[in-house]
Length: 434
Image (tube, rainbow, N blue to C red; front, side, top):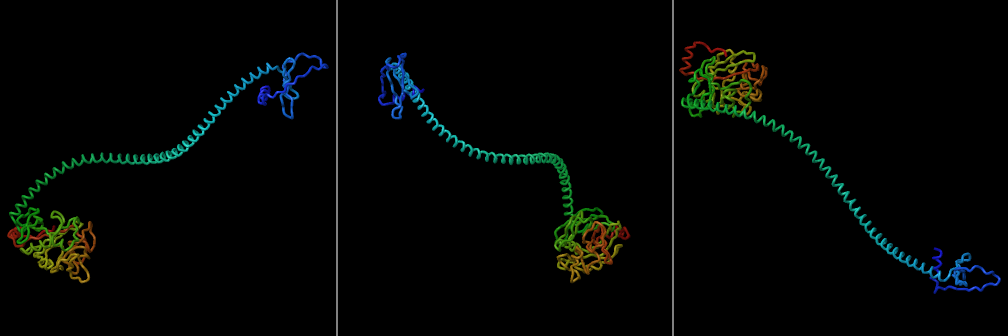
């Protein structure tokens, strides 16, 4: 490599400025072996200058420095130069290739930089997109959890619905059986209705004013009074007081509320086959159509029974306040507790006709009656399931005792009918206790 640098230096010198010095043979020096090529380089003005000395054998000396001298022939030098020139050419070609490679590498570096920048941009975009996808995935996971919860709820509801459907199917089967049973009942009631209709038509054709024609056969029959619409009544048939009695009031079990207003007591309410009140207007029409008598039967919770009979019973008109106009003589084993109400108007919680000026007796006794100061009887009072001593109860007492009754029934019957006279002549006895 040192030789290559020397040759390169020589080539770069101006026009190969090489100083060739020929040395004469020194007589004093012994003749030495002929030297081959020798090159020496000597310094000149502090600068290394190559000095070539041609030996007699056409050797050139190249002084590298003060210690090194190279002797070489010109032919060898030319060969060496050719070799080195070839090497220089090869090196130049290699340098050019390397420069090309460097350019390619630089170009590749630029491309790699662009790729790296694009990669970084893509990485940032992917990171942002990944964050967005992560958020969306989190939202989707939450949504999935919510939907799973809803699915569980719907599954629970579905199971309930399935159980309900099963129950409804069972109920449907039961209802089908019930419908068949009810159809049978409808058929039965249709038949009974036709029979009742036929009975009513027969009653309509008979058009009686009392229950006497039905004798000892109880039932619900149609009554026709002059200038009044026909209406149904409960005929009691054979009782302890004889046949032909018509029920105008009945208390049995408290199934009907009797604490009602004036209009309800005027028209009547309840069911003829259960608890009911006929209605003051109908009672007025019946008792004014012909003379009637009144029979009241009582039963206490201990099983004791009693009765009160009045041989005259007449109720005034609505304009007269449905006054207890006529009561007649008392007979019985209960007590004459209705006597104090004789000639009194009927009172309800919304129509105060009693003798008290500072109190409504109907409100005080929770009923409706012919109150005076206030009452010794209260047959339309409040029903109690057991015997109590209460001013609101159903009671019938001579000395203002309020022991509640278990049941009571008020009956009326015309007193001038031929059938009644025949019955009295046959029995020749007083009515028995119920």
